[in-house]
Image: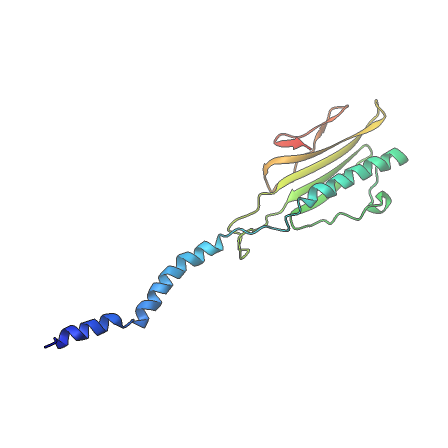
Length: 175
């Protein structure tokens, strides 16, 4: 004769308790959800750093302009290049033009790389600074494009012109 109590216990263990299922799902979903927040995504396409291209075009254009006009230009129209935007996905750009020197700064922006853009992780972007100077002794221009070795969100310091060539500031290397 079967035990009526044993049969009830067996049936109870086979039934799934919906409250228990919901609780276990919630407990598993919390760590998964937190983990998803830290998934890193690229900040743009994988086509390279456009800041290097923009700074390089600006420097070469200033050199060519100085060769033709014996001065540096303050306008992009006279350089015959498209204007460099002040703000891009990665950088804040600024230029400085004096009578014998030109500087272009690419200061990195704080760009979140986590999946939801919450700023939990940030992109490591190197600062850029480019310069062109006219050397009166050689009667030629000299230029440099310096790239930061690490990631910083400060405006880069100017390269030093020692009368013959540029030297990148500390923490930067020449390209």
